[in-house]
Length: 97
Ligand SMILES: [Zn+2]
Image (cartoon, rainbow, N blue to C red; front, side, top):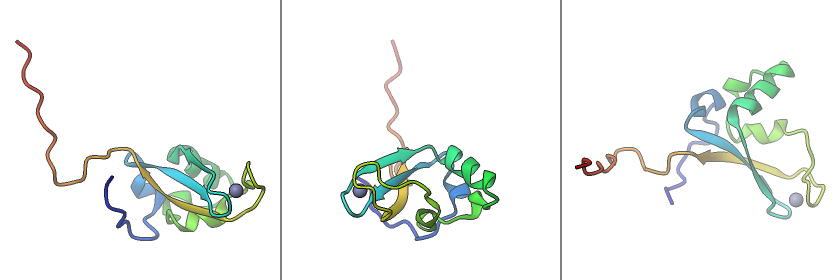
């Protein structure tokens, strides 16, 4: 696991291609991952400037109750797609014979 030192409020637009949106219910710990591009598109459709919304602030824009417990106690954080920490070069595969 990588370290969780993301700054609260990294704009969604900046995370596109690097992370998806991990939605966690603080009441029952249900969680789901949402495609960040779709989340931004939905925000834009509501006249919210999605790309500039911070990843943590996005929780305030969720318009669905928890599918398991029905509460609205959402927490949002990035779900990074690439698990290789930045700065560590990818291992090169040996060349095929
Ligand atoms: Zn819940």
